[in-house]
Length: 326
Ligand SMILES: [Zn+2]
Image 1 (tube, rainbow, N blue to C red):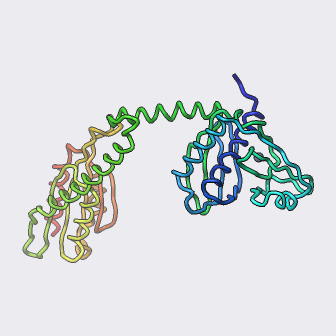
Image 2: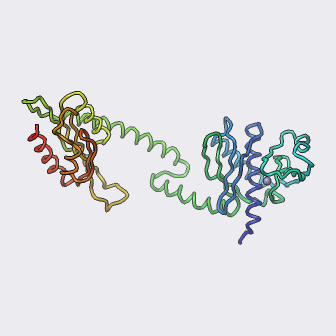
Image 3: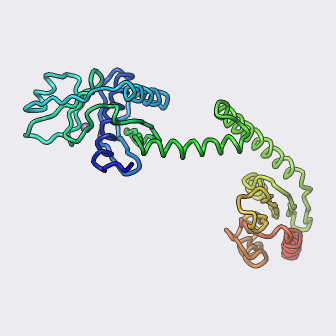
């Protein structure tokens, strides 16, 4: 059944009153709603952030709104000659100045025994008309918390779409809906541990490179070909080696792309060419541009991209070129 835009708007807008009212009751204080945007598929409430307005509490407020929708609450209109009069009558009144058109009369929207707000927009007559309320996003920006929500048919579509995503995540992770949060936390922890291990492995592999010494001018050459090391560790190793000794570093690293999202992507490796700044004859940027083709950088530090099959030849060519120049 097609809803009229006016009804969709009134229902979403009334649900916003119920939701902010539920948040206020949980927090024990009146909130300031800076603005509310209503769109075809969702809505956003911009609320001044206060301490404790966290996701858990927002979820509690969402449950409360759905309980009130289920049991039904009347929407009652109170009219006053001014906002001051209205506030005198309802001291905890929430008022969004934008929504009140003074000096005409001020309308206070009461959700029976739940919420009071001064507002000039359209509302439904009972909360049951809101049908279903879902918070779909919470994000903080400066001192404002943005809360996206959907209502009625919108919310049902969002629920179907979101649940499909959740079940896909369960399918991918081997979890069920009850265990998926713990499973994701476990995967995150495992991933962090594996990354730490891989960093250690990368450092150890790089430290095990046997340096080649060019005795006539006491230059040390570090070169090697690796697979699946962490690139940032290679860059750090190269920077350290060339920082305060006459060193040249040439390291290629193949990236395993089998699990990549794009199976047709070219197998790729990176190559780092770095030299101590005093070695003016070794222009790493030029070497990468001329021998590797793709990449570049500074005269003392450059990075290139090569095919995995070319790693050995490229490293050999650069080592030969460097040795001839030293
Ligand atoms: Zn309103």
